[in-house]
Length: 316
Image (cartoon, rainbow, N blue to C red; front, side, top):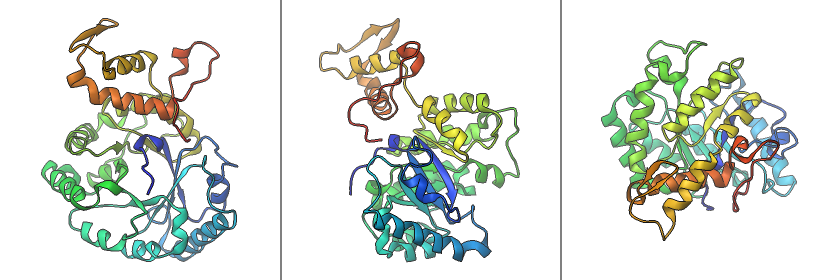
């Protein structure tokens, strides 16, 4: 199993398994800038279409195999099963070798064991989604995090925050004029960032369903990044570049991070009128360097007309 950085995810686009253009996206004919794709068999597929969706997924995997596998510069590919029973069936498909892993819907401590039994293929990564009423309880999240660390930690790329489902638990829906951070998610997201982040898990941000509000999406992304979230779910191709542009780092942060991780760094020093203390800022600096490796530096910091440059080592 190759180690996958959570920052490699970027904008993770969800697409129903019934789509007929999935192969074009996997091979970069469509959306060549996409970093990660989830073929969804759960909420995005109606019950009456499940059989068709499974056949379409099988056809996709066979087509990938016929081409000799996925391209090395294509998006990461995940499948979102409907439940653990479906995951157990997919787990045994030989062609799942062409998939990076599963997105686990509605994971809780109560169904964790069923998922552990279902997904035994050690080459499949997992991205559990936190989207049930348990998520509002920090004690439940501590217990879930501990259980995941005990058995599946090395296979979990990131935990996905299911904002729409969590709002649905409260009978709410976001307004078109405010970010999720103006809703009860202003409690949930920071809590998860603290509880799960302190246990070593990366987290990705919820969807933004207001397709006609790109400026509001950018505002929400700033808050996502400020809370340490490493990527964001996209529900439309128009959101992909906005999300991935926002994940680029500022040149100031990049330079600060390099100074902080330097072997020659003093215990405390000033850089651009900001105090830097390697003992406390080291993890932040490493995260900035990892973001820069995958997403590069903000174009405005490079100068007019210059393209963002990825650091060496980024495969996508």
